[in-house]
Amino acid sequence: MSEDRVTNQPTQNQPKVNHDGFEQEDLSSRSALYFLAGLVLVGIVVYLIVFGMYRFLDSYAKAHQPPMSPMVTPQADTRAVTPENAETFPQPRLEENERTQLRSFIEDQDRKLATYDWVDKDRGTVRIPIDHAMELIAQRGLPVHAESASSAQSSAAKNSETKTSTPVKKQTPKAAKTKAAASGK
Image 1 (cartoon, rainbow, N blue to C red):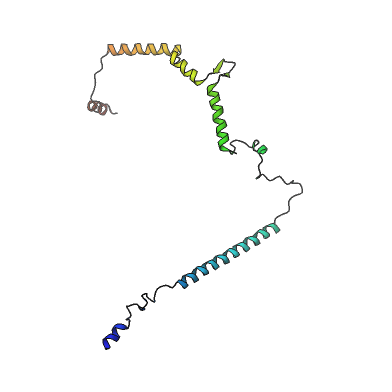
Image 2: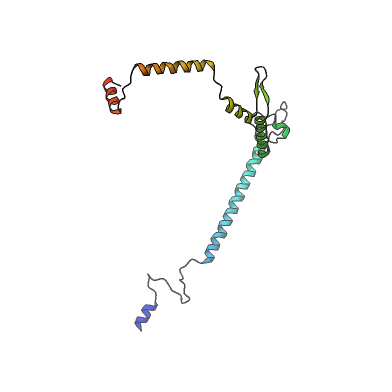
């Protein structure tokens, strides 16, 4: 019997076991609820302290503000903007309605690409529809200036003369490196 008493009594290393099936050393739910309630109370107290502090500082600032000069006239609130005032602001302006503004911009660009109009009336420069311009380029080709055409022909003739008069010996990359090292480059 003495052995039964020893085994039934818990030792220092063994937790107390209740016959209901759980340990007595577990954290109770009541202590977790007390902690959460205390946390809420601390939050409310901190909020009230900060709210009171800001009210005090605001009233202090209003009381100690220097009086406004009688020469200064109070201006309208510039934070409230009406659509009429928006046109007087410098560029870039904020978009009021992005979709309609973008749609009107794209429609304006499409209209310009599809219609005839003067670009510079004094010089005789006209804008033609893009489809018609592509057809004209396909038929006529790109315009070439006479000066550049004659200089291109003369440079081509010079190149052909140099090719026929002096044959060029092809070098391997290794030979080019050795010649460059020998010349000091």
